[in-house]
Every structure is written in C-alpha cells, then in structure tokens.
Length: 359
Image (cartoon, rainbow, N blue to C red; front, top):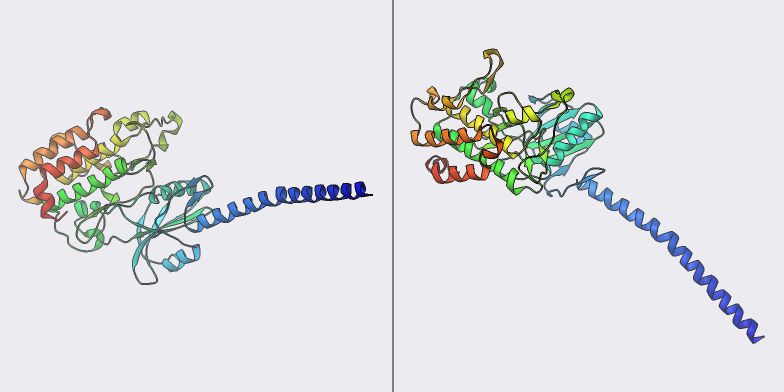
C-alpha cells in the first residue's frame, strides 16, 4: 500500500512538472513577440523606424505628424506655395504657436514614396547650423511630408541672379564679404556631412537654388533628395547601365563630369560642385544657361570679378579662391581637395572676410 502511494505521488509530480514546462514553452514566445511588437510600435511613434528595414536615432525635437495635422498646417493645401520640385510642392505653413514652417509635400506613386523615405532617412541623421533644420515629418503609404524651419530670405539663386524680383523687393548685390561668408558656411556644412556623419553623406546636388539664406544672409544647405548615405572609401561604385542614364541625379553645370561618365559618385563629386559655386559667387555668372549654350563658367573667368561689386573686393583672396577652384574642378577626383582642406584654407587665409560677418 505504501508503494502504491509513493508511485501516485511521483506520477502526480511528473504530470505537474510537464504541465508547467508546456505552459512556459507556449507562453513566453508569445509574450516575447508581443513585447517586440509593442517596442517597434513605440519606436515608430518616436520616429525611429523609417521603414521596415531602416531604424534611425532621432532627435527628440523632430516630431512625427499625422496626415490630418499636415492638412491643418497647410490649411488643406491652400497655403501659399513657396517652392515646387519634380515630385513635391512646398507650402508656407503655420504651427499652432504661429511659427512659420516650410512644408514639403510628396504625393505620388509608391516608387517615388521610397525616394521620399530615403530623403527622410538622411534628414533624420543630420543636425548642423548651416543645414536647414527638420522640424517634423509625416510618412504614409504613397504620401509624405517634411516640415522644415522657414528660411525667409529666399535662395542664393534668387539673391545672386534675380535681384529680388522673385520676392518683389529690390535687393542690393551681395558684397564680397557676404559671398565669402556664404562660401564658408557651405564649406563647413559639407565638411560635416563628409567627415562628421556616420555613415558619411554625399549631398549630390549642390547648386544655388539648394542654398537658403536667412535674414542675416547665413546660408543653409537644403534638398537632400539626391543624397547618398554611407561609403568606406573616397569612391562609391554605383555604375549606371546605359539604358538607365536618365536616372543619373544632379544638375547641369554643377554635376561632376567623372560621375556623368562613370555613374560613380564620391565626396569629391560634392567638392567639384562646390568649386563651380565658388566660381559663380566670384564672377556673378550662372554656371549653366541652356539658352546660351549650356555650361558658361571656366576657371579662367575667375580673373573677372562680378562687375556689380564695383571693384570692392580683396584681390589677394580672389587669387586664393582661384587656386581652390582650379583644384576643385580638376579632372581627377582623387586630386581634388577634401572639404576639411578647403575649410582650413578659409580659416587661415580668408579670415578677414569671415570675421567681418561674425561667422
């Protein structure tokens, strides 16, 4: 009888242990998956998940908006239009506290929405005083919006070539000091992208219309729709098949010829574009004009400073810049200077112009 009792106890204990093990095996995987889902949803609310495969650390100041909020910011997209791109429209929006913002709205196919997500991924990685600040974003299937700080003084294109006509005011020509300030700010913004972002970032579309100017004429780089993230050497192989040459990004007159020939981009492609912009700032001549036959600028033109300056410029600095430009637009990308080298030249040799505008 005692033997039967012991056997019953042992069997009962075995069955109880088996039940507990079964329960644990069934419950914990489900709990783990649920916790992971909750964590991912929380990340998405904080803007950490850009897509199903991309996660980015986001500054707490960058807000994720709902589409209904974007509609309110733009008064249901009836707010003044302050810019247009190939696949986007930029509205002058208002935050609840009446702060003005620029709202860039993308509304098109799923393929183009992926391009929007790529731009968003870049913007979530960067923060620099000479790069336009991302306030927030909305990311929905086939629709998206980017909310930026509003820079009220137009673009370098407006200021350098349109004499204020775009904004309905009469602008004075940019002084030599202001041109040096704009060049320096652009140089430090590119140095930040190339050397201080991890992974590094190539802007890929430098031109005057992608440089905004504040009321104090501080330049801010914008439009990262063509930007590329991450590379481990000076050159990033990205060969483009002949039948897809139309896919090459950039703007006529500013794009690196080496990139146009090979489809291979690098930090030195941005350096080339920076050199062209320097020429444009010094001479006042557009880099490209289709009606006048395409590319207009050559290094030799650096000897002729914008006549609107009435001779009020530093010829020693012009000579220094001419040498910088010559190196920037050289045929071999590997022989072009880095943006850090260019920033050092400005710091060491253009100090009078930089300090004069309180950079």
